[in-house]
Amino acid sequence: MKFYRELNKCYFHKERDKVFASETEKKLAKKAMILLWNKESIKVHDITYFNDKIRQKIIDEMMPEILDRAIEVYREAKGVKSETAYLAACIFRTLLDYNSYIERLVRQTCRW
Image (tube, rainbow, N blue to C red; front, side, top):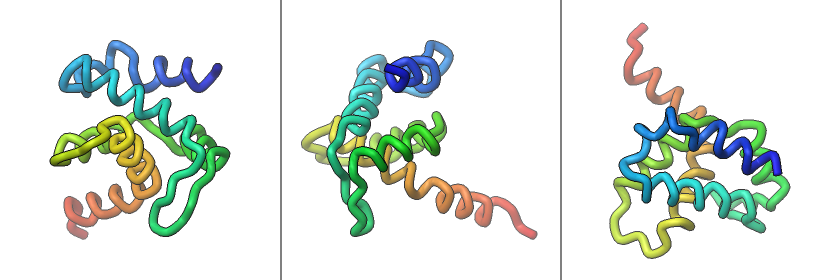
């Protein structure tokens, strides 16, 4: 399936190994992306996204930088019970909020 090929080509190729703290973290991130792809629904900000919308957002909007930011957020988490599910949720929330995150960074770093 195209999604699985793109995962390896875009997010988990050898040149990106330095993004991950370990091979275990890389495998966890891949499992989280697959879990997100197969998720029936996810609720964020009181909006329920169903599988077709989740997949559309992943295909149309997902970038390696979003995964990288989600992993940073995941690393700061304490007492996570289901690591894969938590990271999948972090990825999707980061995907939804990434433009706001970038705008905030620009405002913080650029003084006009």
